Image: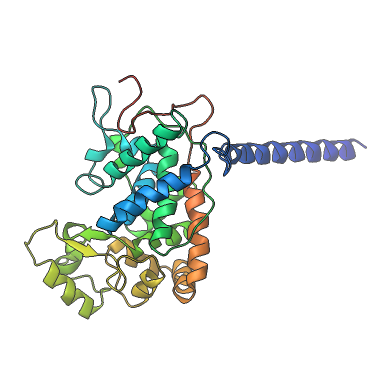
Length: 332
């Protein structure tokens, strides 16, 4: 009788714990909603898309740059628009951190979007949400998928220079990449899918030149690089040459969002070390192969992973603020 009562008590406790845990995670997700601005700024998505489309007409790279801004925002203290803040008396901007300095771009387009949105719905839409909407519009305008963007983030009032210096790096080994993704609640499929954003955009010679001449201080090129591709890259990035020369992350279709990134990896033609690392592990390589053979599988998983990334520690309710200028905290 005692054992039976104890069993029922333990079962009840476990059920209650699971229910509370489930409610916690559902609540954290429920902070964001696809209908958040339906009654307050219903055409915000259209405004964002139109401005990006205008920018894209004169700068084909801008869609990749805007997508990258959302990534660099969310991986540092969550998706709070902190990557957009300029230096001030109280803030050390993330823009000066090594992964961002003279690399992240598109801030003026974000400013234009914010101005247009403020003209229609003043004080309503956060800069963090603008980045999320801009990433989805950018990917789709480049031929990629669309997904339902969850909204309702508020803007942070601080930046993290040290956090920005710990962003996933093009030279990170796989164990480090996995750790950095795991630390923000993202798994292997997210790692492979989000890396697929390198299907468009460009990277500087300085991001990978060691692979061409002195990989892991060996005095030799990275043996995993396809030799023909290696020769092409050595022409573009001569030893001792300029580190700021831009190279296409996907030479076959540099301005189109497609599955070619993964077929490049299969051919040992990943530009960055962090790209090619995805084929060094059997479980990740199987995901690479599935995306290479099915663009629809890549598109579906990319959209899901972007939603997962967009759910990293959003500010909501009375936390944070709605910045009137994405570059500075209100009142500063």
